[in-house]
Length: 208
Image (cartoon, rainbow, N blue to C red):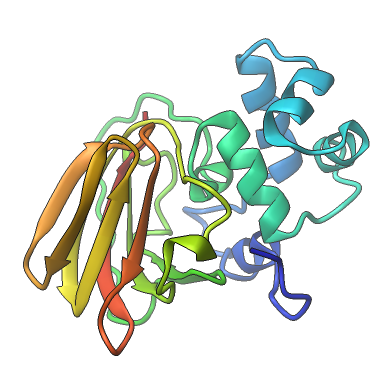
């Protein structure tokens, strides 16, 4: 799977959708550096884990380049997190009550070549879980560049159409509207649509 030149990077989309006082855009450079150091990895180790050149990772950590979605996906896989978690600050203890309402179609869009994500409750930072609605564009497993893996657990619920859930250790499962699945997100997984139209699902990822 290749990155189309016309597709904006996630960092551009994240910054464009910021602006709420409750959700300051995350400093991606600092966030990547923080995640790497939390694992006690050198630049060389992290770059090797992510399949990136050391110079590329160094430029990302120093804010000298805006990475493409393909580079962000490699970083997320290497760090064993989801791409949206790159834009979510590290969790700190919270007190009091919080609530966020996202009107239909007003989530933050993160389109890719295989999925079209709409991040929900994006105005809240330091969430314990990451909810998002996804339109499934992919029609074949081969459209993915390998398995998707990240930390935490994940729940999906089919909203419209039919999907096929591929997982690393189980046989593929066909699912239709109303079906759901809960699984370990560190296990390789991918989803394709087997409907004539793109299927849509609700995804909730635990922020481990």
